Image 1: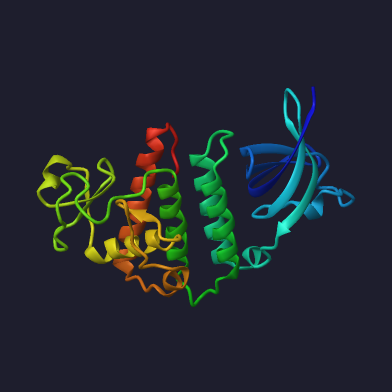
Image 2: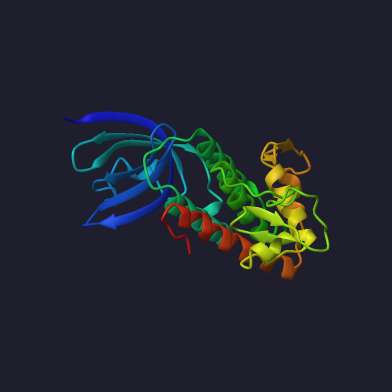
Length: 260
């Protein structure tokens, strides 16, 4: 039995097959992650060519059979023309797509993930480089995505003992899911030393997404315009990259996936 479905979709992966087919991997508003086959889409006469592409927002229709989902219609609903033209934006888009590809393995709908993807790629399209530090734009997505999944880090008090943090002695623990104090680091020899300024950056990033909850409290200290203006020292950027990678690997290991 063939069933028709129509939904909005964000395209984060594509793969060419045979002479003219292409498989798109999508995160859809109504069905979560879906793979669809677009038959003969690489031919110039294909009616689907203008309606769907990598890093596009489209309204799609597909039919589901026992073996595959086949794309039957696609209309672009969100214009993101700048992303393919700016190397830094392409780099971020590819990294974000890798996150989505690795973290989201099944057809589970999630409105928060959908809203974050749509909002982020519109922001990525509209922001201007080189005035913006494109690394912080990636960190913005990564940490807010992690928070939406339920793994947002504890940044306001020790994630292990819940005591106040001493800014001079801060450590990030993957196992505890956030920043821990000097006393608690003895029970976690895998923790990573973290500067107080890096913790402040993470707080701003996480509070920027409409006042994301940090440890049960709304802290409206961030905002997209503030994110774009953040100046991050090279050593702090390297620290953020390391912590993001390690925490991403840790969270993925809980689900049997690997990101990097």
